[in-house]
Structures are given as C-alpha cells and as structure tokens.
Amino acid sequence: MNSNRRELTGFVALLMMVLAALVPISALIFGLRILPEFGLVIYKEQFLAFFLTLCLVLTFMLKPAYSGAANDRVPWYDTLLIIATLGSGGYVAFWYHELVGMMGLITQDKVIVSAIGLVVLLEAARRLAGWTMVLVGLAALSYAFFGHLLSGMFETRNIPFERLLIYNYLGTDAVLGTPLYVAATIVTAFVLFGQVLFLVGGGDAISNFSFALMGKRRGGPAKVAVFSSALFGSLSGSASANVATTGMITIPMMKRVGYKDTQSGAIEAVASTGGLVLPPVMAATGFLMAEFLGVPYSTIALAAAIPALLFYLCVYLQVDLEAGKGGISAWESNELPSMMQSAKQVIPVALSFGVLLYVLFGMMQSPENSAFAATAATVVISLVVPAMRRSIIKYLTVLASAGEAVIFIAVMCAVAGLVVGCLGLTGLGSSLSQNLVAIAGGNVWLLLLFAALGCIVLGMGVPVTATYIILVILVGPALVQVGVNELSAHMFVFYFGTLSFLTPPVCLAVFVAASIAEANPWRTALYALRFAVIAYLIPFVFVFNDSFLMQGSVTGIVHAVLAGIVGVFLLAVSLVGHWVQPVHPLLRLVALVAGLLAFWVGATSWIVLLFTLLALVALYAWQRRNRVNTAIA
Image (cartoon, rainbow, N blue to C red; front, top):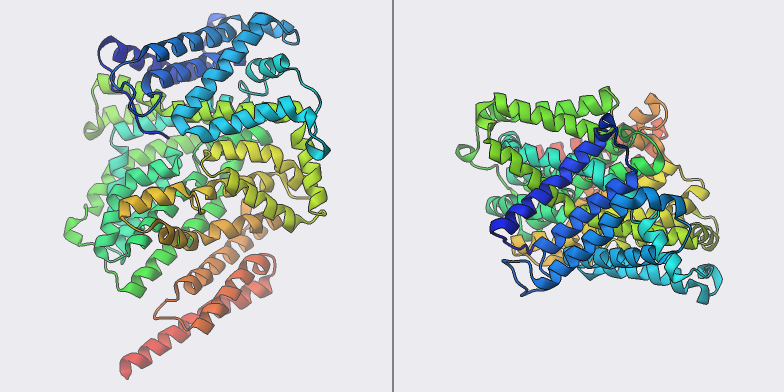
C-alpha cells in the first residue's frame, strides 16, 4: 500500500476523522442488526454502497493523486472526485430499493451512475496500490466487452457496454458482491479489534513476551522475529507492512548477534508472510474462503492450523540450527524484559484472544460478532487494568484509525469483485476450468503446477485477497473437477497466492526486509525460499491427504501430524547441514529423501513413518557419538 498520506488540519481533518470513524461504526450497526430493531430494513447492497462510498471519499481525501501533489489540503480535482463518488454511491445507497425491482432494464441514470462509480473505484485503487490492480480490472472489463471478437476457448457472447457497466456496479455478484461484503463486515470487525488491542498496549505486551520467552535461547532475536511476526502478521493482513513494523526491531538485533544480513532479512520476511495463513485471524482471506465454501469460519481456521504450525516449526528449526552452525549466542540477558513482568503484561491480551476464540468456536457465533465481542472485552479489561487504561479521546479516535486501516482492503475487494463479475458475465470461469482440465489431460499434478504458477504470477503486485478471489474462480473449479476436495482446492490457491510475497522476481516482503537489513535482495530471496520450503511443499501434500487439514478420522489426523513433524525435522537438518555438528553431504541427502518420504508416504503408512523416525533418531545418535569422539580426540 502506498504510504504517502496527506496531513490535513482544521475542519477538513475533523471531517476526515468523522468519516473514518463511520466505517467501523456502520459495520457494527449492520453486523449487530441494530437497524431492524428500529423498524428500518435495508438491502445488503445499500450498506455495501454506503460503506464503499465512505472508503472512496476517504481515499481521495487522504491519498494524493501523484507524487508532488498537495499534501496539506484536498485540491479542487479531488473535491470533484469526492462529489462524483457521493453522487454515484449515494444514488445506490438511498435508492437501491427502487432499483432492485427493475435491475434488468437499461436506463440512462443507471448507466451514468455505474460508469462514474467504476471510474472512481479504479482511480482509488490506483492511488492505494498502483497500476497493477487497475490494469487487472481494466483487463477484465475489456475481455468482457471485446471477448466476442475472439475465438476458441476465450470467445464470449456479445455483451452491450451499458449492460456490462450496470451488471458490475449495481449487480449483487460484482463490486457489491461477496468480497466487499466480507471486507465490510468481518474484516472491519477484526481490524477494529486489532486497533483497540494495540491502543491499550497489546502490541508492546506481545513484543515483550516474545523477547522474554525466546531471547535467552541461542539465536534469540531470530526466534523473537518468528514468534512476534507470526502474531502481528495474522492481525495486520499485510506481509510487507508486518515486515516494516516488526523488522525495524528484529532485523538489526539478528545482525548484531551474528546472523548474516541476508539471513536476517529472509527470516523476518518469511515469518511475517506466514502470519497471513496463521489461525485464528488469517488476515482477511480465511473469512472469504468461509463465505465461498458456505462453511463456518471455525472450519477454515481448524483446517489451516496444521499446515501453519508445520510451517513455523520448519522456520524455527532452521533458525535454531543456523544459530548452532554459526555459533550464534543468545541475547544479553540484562537487556531482556523480565519473564514474570512480561507474562503479567500479556495476560490481559490473552484474555481478549480467549474471548474471541470462545465466542467464535465455543458459542459458534459469526466471525464479526466474535471480533466485536473481543473488542468490547478488550475495552472493559483496559478500564480495569490501570496500565492499559486510556483517555476517552483515545478510545474514540481509535475508531478513525480502524476506519483508515480498512480502506485499502475494502477497495481491493471491490476491484476483485469487479473481476469476479466480469468472469461470471462471460462464463470464463467455467469454460477455462474445463479447458485447463483438457490441457492437463486430467492429470492432477500438471493441473496443480498450472494453478501454483498462476497464483504466484498473478499475485506479484496484487494483494493476496484479490489473488485468492480471482484464482479460486478461474482455477478452483478445475481442481475440484479432477477430484480435489473443495476445501483443499481453496486452501491450495490461498497458499500459493500468499507465497507471491516471497517468490522472485517481485517478492515484496523480501525487498522490504532486504532494505531494512541493507542486504542483497536476490540473495535474501534465496534464503527466504529455503526457510519457507514447507509452504511450497505442504499444499501439494494436503491436496492428496486432507488429514493435514483436519479432515477425516482422529487417527488419520494424528498420523499426519506425527509424519509432518518428523518430515520437518529431517528437511530442516538437510537444508541447514547442521544438527549437533556439521552433517556430511551424503547424510544431508539421506535426510532430504527421508523427510520427503515422511510427508508423502509416512502420513498414510505407519511402517514408512516408523522408518523415517528411526532415520531421524539414528542421525542424531551418529552426530552425538561423533561429537563425543571428536572432543576426546
């Protein structure tokens, strides 16, 4: 996200804060069904139009049109854009109940409103995320309009331009569709929870507890980065933003204790990116997945747990083994916070998360209601705990900061909805899926490779949420058609969309981390690929064995977890080349093969799992014996 932001003053600044505060307030009113209590029933699309209008107006107030534009006031052309936004969005928000009965009729007012609405949406996307998302949206519109001139699998029916505009802006399956609905309800609720948590000191509590817990271990700062970045990344929803936030602290510390600059940057980039797939929050994409699949979010969070934990286990083990290999010691204990003090500090934060998990999983409430409950609990806890208590002004202004934080994801989801609308209107989603299956000859492996490459390529420069939405429409049905479980197909697309943040040549998270570490970005990217190796492997694994997604019997799930742990240990030893002492290249190869066997075969065969476990034990015993003999000699 473009970080350039106007610094407004006076009445305009106050107006901006009020509008920003209305973003989470409107989500709260709609999510808790408050309006029907007063006899006012509105269409979902009316709320979404109001919500999107707020986000677009705030974008034009806060984000300059170009580098060097006025940074202390809203210029005349942005005022015109704001008026146009209020006109098009307000038309839908206040008169949708009259429009819905004659949506199929093409009228001049609907065409004009739709054209204006789509133009301001794409301009807002350009300011927030650059040209990439704009080009994706324009490509979708161009394909829907000119597709009838093509031939073969990409040929479409002739769609009048007026119909194209109205369908995408006013229809229920495009801009005002599921992606924006999730952003306006669930994502906004969780962003508000995160903002309130950080306001009352939750961020410092997590950071201090991470240092107290991990700092005294060898390679302590790197383990702090893994632990804290996982938690921050799950809440922030942006790998790059997470790197920029936590990396400013952890990367210099890792370099200070002895990690290479490239290693330090890679560790932070990988740990921050992994937060996007870590339950219970999983940024925004997990909520979208639940909506698309029509299942409770708790099902998605549980399914994502084993792959995410194996991912972080692999990163942690490699960090630890690198510390042993390089003789990297712990952080000086006198500079670390007290474990007792940091534990007391983190208990109120843990209570807030406890409320979130209890309402979500125990009471089986919706994700947005769970987040609102956790937010209320956090405010109550902060009023009881003196160190967390804040002034009333702070509690009110956090509404505005939450509203600002939502703008980016809301606009990106709206553009993604535009793409989904064009794909639905042209029928490309279903036809492309059938043709992909035909090209792959029904071969699941070939289709998975197509899907993985497509996710990574499309995800370069595109937010992970938008990548998931587009790819799951294009490729998801093809995977299901060849026999892949629907949940596995969605999770596969999700994982590889996320990995675009780490995969060259774009790898945004790596570039941010490398700049902080003052390291070569390409060497940093190579280290990042190695640290994140499990993230590239495990999607292929859970496609063929959904026990890794907590599907099936308890025995099968336990079997998969044990196999995953053994496989991760073997792969970490093989990749680093060190355990108790340096590992011979031939033994590294054996460990690599045994690790892959544990994942692919050991998860379904107890005999193979036992064999790989014995290989792990034998390697450790061999290393211990050689170290003792070396010490005696």
